[in-house]
Image 1 (tube, rainbow, N blue to C red):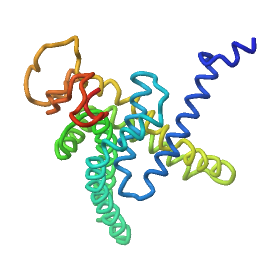
Image 2: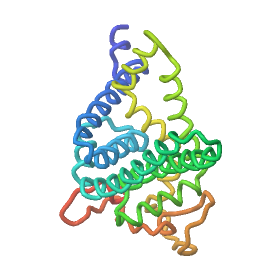
Image 3: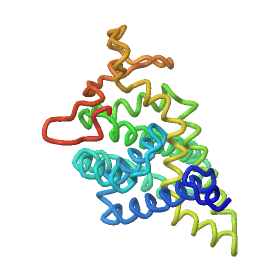
Image 4: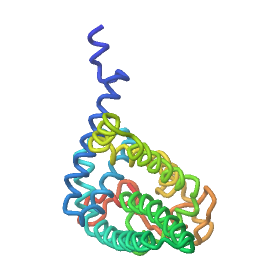
Length: 254
């Protein structure tokens, strides 16, 4: 009986192992994001690790995280600085609008909230794409915006999950709020990205190279249906087992 309890294939042990992985990923993300400008590389690494869990059920979280962090540092940082500037602009616009008590400013604040929602949804797609594909920064940002609208139900789902978490923390009080904040510090970022990858995974898989399918793309335009493939988004990933020259890059569509 003890052998069954401590068997690594036991569902309880698998759950505990995955919970430990998520806690470590969350700590890694927070520590590697402390300089602020490195948040982009950390987000790429976190998405890569969570997608690998979904794709291959691998538990090498440290190796996956740091490999992706290193290989996506330059582009991830560039994309994050662009998104950070846009986010700060929206924040400042909202602060200025909040100081105006006139009712006529309400439509402006609604537009700011909509823009902030689109900003977050595009951010989620952006670093999921960056973690698994090779492309230019501008093209990745463009594709993330396209996916935000093309896969609107999935995008809204990711936004809704974040909103529920924030509302719960904001409306809770006392001991409940303390536990909620503790949860966010221990698991918040990694679990959020893991849940997002459940929504992103089918789309990412469609964009991955398929060794068994040699059919050329039907056209060179991005389509909004569920059959969109990697060539339609402008990606040219390497074959599954081929490495980018000079690097073992997780952003090659592997």
